[in-house]
Length: 328
Image (cartoon, helix red, strand yellow):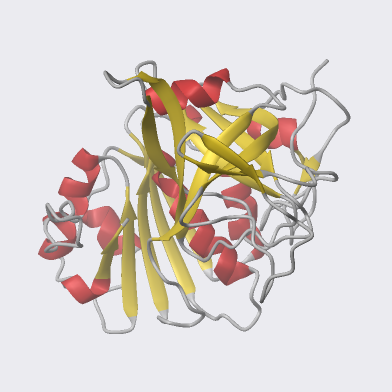
């Protein structure tokens, strides 16, 4: 029996999840609904979780009172989170919802990612080997009892194949958060964004933070590049966000358009950037996230030490400086 994943995304008219994402849920139950903005919490969630350090699991004592609000995440220890549900977003991308104690805060700041890991057998000394990958949650950091990860599943991707093997009730080891970009309301007058494929995830974190805050007047311009129209992740959510928030403008471009495609065609070009991004200025910022080849073409990659490095590519040609560009 087909089931749907979301109850709602805040701040817009509800749209059923199958219409929005064409998805089917593994766990199967009643219909969920969503509307664009932020993904609302599902009922339930588990009442305890585990702290993982190496191969040792230790129960977290929930009765223990600590200073400040209780947080579900821990940047220093691997925690196990239970998979609540999954939904197919595109032919090679799935959305995974993990639950935690709803009385706790997730402890995620915009824009941050989480580290995930999965066992990969044993080394010569008999110790467990792991594959570790970072992923950016796309759910509202204030959501109670859950977070959502959007995962592109690659045939040879060790971590993404691990995700694809998970069933509701299975657990995932997570550590974090790792802050990538510290956003604060009205920090810039205009923020431009260039995203490719699953590089949309940190952009969604920032977009959601801006549009849900009535005191934030930041203008947002997003250029979103994909292989084909079917590869555009969460397009209906983005479209509804744009329709409901006049400070958000989105331009899509694809390499392989269909006959009915009405957006841009080809890689993000200098002309697209000129028309779709804020001009270089002290009160503007351009965020970039995508595969390595795209990053080199748009902004240059990060430095060998993973610092921001110098700006290259299209953005350099258009006059943007290191202070005006941030690379995820």
